[in-house]
Length: 274
Image (cartoon, rainbow, N blue to C red; front, side, top):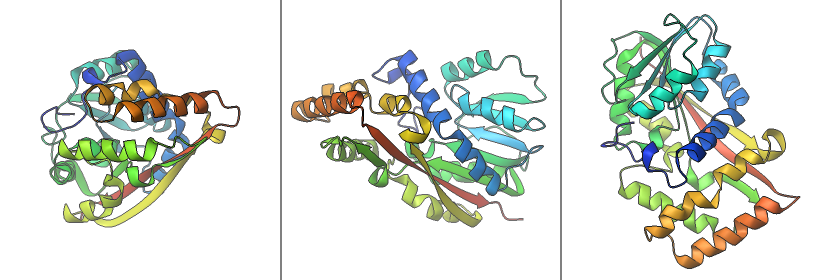
């Protein structure tokens, strides 16, 4: 993603590069089977030319390659560090199956009317101008091609037991901070309207539920790792009291034999007019 037009920079995450990679991996793989099922219901099929926008370190790219053995996948990201990690992990793939593109979602430098299907996973919440990005993705889709955006809405993020009592107020502060920097952690609710405003038709939407009883608790522990919030405490976004309370609540959650958690992800699909 373009640091000038995005609120996410891999090199700046407070938990460090290796921990962030592990978090991204868990985040990508926990709900993949359900996401793939929904992608297929939206029209994803083997043999298509598929664009993955904001492909990052390649965890979802690898799943796409596994599940679409006759497709050509193009993985696009602005972050050269993440792109190099993906290239290293997937270096066994021939160019006929996998192409990499180091470019911005706002200016992909890809040809008009080329792709059958585009996927943008947890990208749009970080974008300063999501409408501009959606219009650029439409340009590179064939008429009748589809864009699926997979993203979050912090207002209905899920549930966690034992409850992290201070978490809702902290998430609200983080959403406000991201909004002040140009992002939108509540973008899930806006996806259908954004797709329509950018010119897509036949807009549809679904939700994916990830539950620790189904996908394992460890992935959720990484998502709520207290170290992810340390930077916000140091920068004054959350108070000492909030940070201490969150730390205590997280420790209770992490060590409780009855702990469980649920997270919601939203998938919106639009079709380029023929």
